Amino acid sequence: MKIKTAQVLTSLDGKALKTEGSELTVGNAIASMLLAPRSEREIYHFDKVKSFVLAKKFYSDDEVDIDDADNKKLTDTIESDSTFGPVVSGQILLLLNETK
Image 1: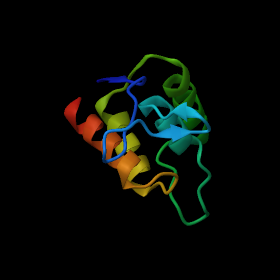
Image 2 (image 1 turned 135 degrees about the vertical axis):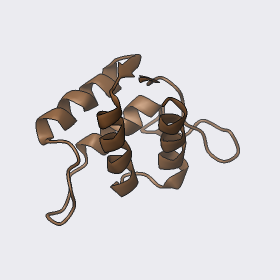
Image 3 (image 1 turned 90 degrees about the vertical axis):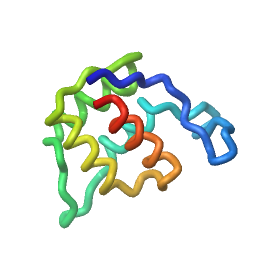
């Protein structure tokens, strides 16, 4: 499954979301969630090296190709992450479901 990372995420009124002055993209948001530290009781769905490698791809590539197993782990990561609220996480989860 191919995920286009340059898609800009929007607020409920359709305006581009921004972080640190730049538009927030699918790739940047996913990279941030993959790199977010977890507490001892939270689960890393990917090992730390895989999280780092995937985060680099989502941050720098225009498109990232992942298999069904990684899609499931990525979905679980986003579901359990508190970096962003539902406006960001929801859009990405819908995108992951659409690209199946």
